[in-house]
Amino acid sequence: MDITYGQYLKVQELLSLQQPVGTPVEHDETLFIIIHQVYELWFKQQLHEGQHLRELLAQGRLEEAASTLARMLKILKTMVAQIDVLETMTPVSFLAFRNFLTNASGFQSWQFRAFEFFLGKRNLKVMERYPAASAERLALEEHAKLPTLWSGFIQCLAKMGENVPTSALQREATAATISDPELQELLLRVYHKPGPLRGMCEMLVDFDEGIQEWRYRHVKMVERTIGTKTGTGGSSGVDYLRATLFQPSFPDLWEIRSQL
Image (cartoon, rainbow, N blue to C red; front, side, top):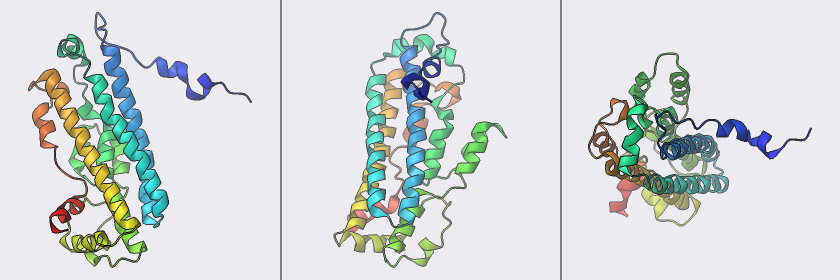
C-alpha cells in the first residue's frame, strides 16, 4: 500500500494543532505555540534516546552509547538555539496575549519533569502538581520507576572491569543522583588513563553543561520578556528559575575537577 509524505507525517493533523487563543489574535502567538510544541517533541526524542543510552551503558556497549549521546548533544544544542528564535518576540508582543494563557505554563510540562527524573533529579513531589489519575501523573509515575542515566553509567564502569564501590553498586537504580566520595576516587583513576571510559565521562560533562546552559538561556529569555513578574500558572517566574541554575546532574564528574 502506497503512503504519501503527508500521510506518513500526518502533516494536516500537525498543522491543525496551532490554535491561538488571543482575541484578536496576536501575530507572535503562533510563533510562541510552535516553539513550545517543538520543545515537547524534542523532549519526547530525548527521553526516547535517553533510555536507549542508559541500556547501552548498562550493557557496556560504549561505542554505541557514545554515538547515541552525541545525537542527544546535537539535539540539546538545537533546543538552546531555539531560544534565539523565541527572543525575536518583544515583551510587548508577548504581553499582548499573555493573559489569554491563564494558568498555562511551561512549569507544567510533564515531559520535562520526566527528563529531570532520567537525569537523576528525583523530586517526586512535582507529581503532586498533576491531578491524580491524569495522563500526565500516570506517565510521570511510570518514569519515576525507570533507572537513571547515572545508574547506567555505574553499571558500565563495572562491565568495563572497574572496581566500583559497593555503595554505588548497591544504590537503587531509581534513586536520585548524589555525590559519592568513594566513586570519585574511581573516577580520578579513570581520568588518569586514556580510553573510552574517560571519553564517556567527558561526553557526560558536555551533556550536563549543555543542560545547565539551556536552563540559563531560558532564565534570561524569561527575564528579558517579563522581568520579575509572577510567571503564568502562578509560579514565581524568574526567581524560581534562577534557583534551578548551576545544579549539575552528575556532581561527581564536577567535584573531581579540583583533584585532577
